Image (cartoon, rainbow, N blue to C red; front, side):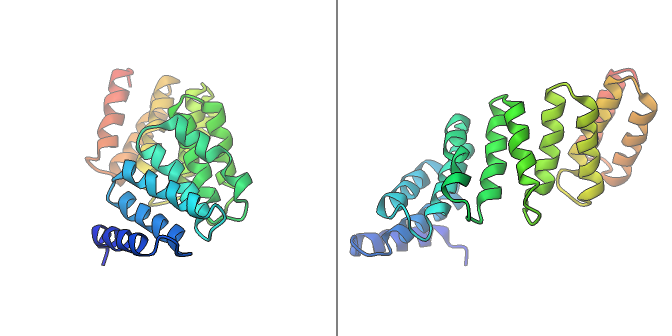
Length: 220
């Protein structure tokens, strides 16, 4: 039913009625998840912490630990997210959240302008063939390389987003950054070819307009 507020009320009542229950850690975790889904991140932190306090080795301990780091990220506390997620894999090597944690570790490092560290994390995500963050990690590898001034490597990653993940939500972003690289290299023919591709795939899209503006400003 996706009634997250109602779920929170139910978990609250469970913890209040049965404070010594073996399911307190689970109730606290799912209460935190309900708050997370409502974007009540600060409140969610308290419940993820309470879940880990109730049972540090519980069934949902890895989930709670991941969401602590993820919540820090959503709150803009990138240093806190990095601290929480950097040791996740070593603590929970068999967790199904390892790839997620590694991706958000990369995002936190990227936001902290640690592009070399971000590259390490995003590259590791690619080790998880079934990860839902493969396209995002590939895109942010391109962004990280670009920030480091490695334009050929950056271009390679952006092209992989387009070729390997058709339909990705990062496809137009990647094409935009391809245009930027070609313009900065004064390769107007390639830049205009990518712009034409952007126009065909995303007519009137924001990244299409941004790419056109960047090319015009850059003399293409």
